[in-house]
Length: 195
Image (cartoon, rainbow, N blue to C red; front, side, top):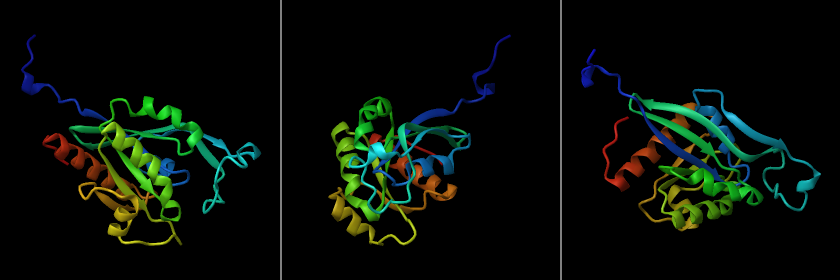
């Protein structure tokens, strides 16, 4: 039996995306909010061993931390399936970033305005690797609000890097951030993308 190529179902294109940012910025929350499958989490309870190591300033209520990665999946269109890898935010776990970043189309850097300086290591890392990224300002209740241009200036970002507001707890908001990243990466690679 011979199959006509046009009769075969098209397989979706698999795209690897990293979700990065500082400790407590909402990476695990974003992966969980948008994943269409039950997300894989490697969270451990914060213990006394983190005293003097983990800075809990402005995130005192945080009780767990990602020690390896979070993993989830979302289908954007019939043509694109995103595989999401949430990175650990604490410096002592950064050694896994190189493995996670291998083959990634791009990254979302979640920014917490209560701890904006925590974005610098992520920005520096992806700039050094030449990995396309967008910055998503996670709007926590009670956190300081800034204009996006103020965030761009504070993080010393090039005008070409997209910055968006988001609520990592909400699926639609997280999905829009991912679409922004895919479109940004496609523009940089001069590839067409449909959503």
